[in-house]
Length: 201
Image (tube, rainbow, N blue to C red; front, side):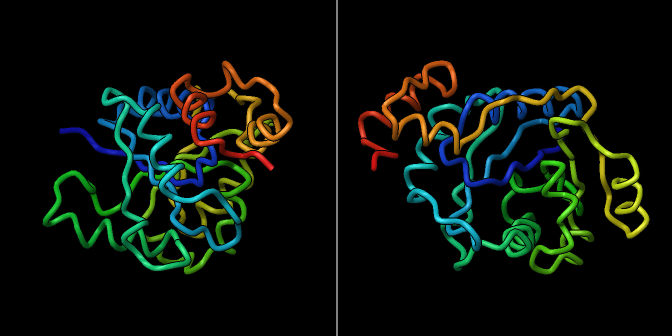
């Protein structure tokens, strides 16, 4: 069995950019599957109820790509990444689907990675995560990656990932303004948003 990679985020809502990035990462690094982990109660963001974001991910993540985990709904608030990572590693002896190595492959955007030392307990993240970093619009600065590597962070820049110009914030604004989001999200996600009347003001 191959290694799994984890994709944390609010996914508010999940869009085609998330799915395309996950597919490309899975192919480039030959991961067995991508595990999507929606945040239960992110410490610095107000977001849609967890159950809606979880349900939307379930609608757009097929089994060939990976699966969606509700792990953070079973942990305390706020949802700190280090707590979830510790739980995953402590669970691996009883749940073979959790992790396959001591260091967990973890998808992260370039800008988030550069600010990783401001996250809660970054030393734990440095020890237990292998960062798969995505390019931002202007690319990835080699000097930044080298600086983090010298400090002990294990970083692997994704080489085949192109910047995708779509964001969850953009989609929420479009729905609020009664604009069509066809093509930006999976059709099942769009139908779910319409059915539940989400992101309306």
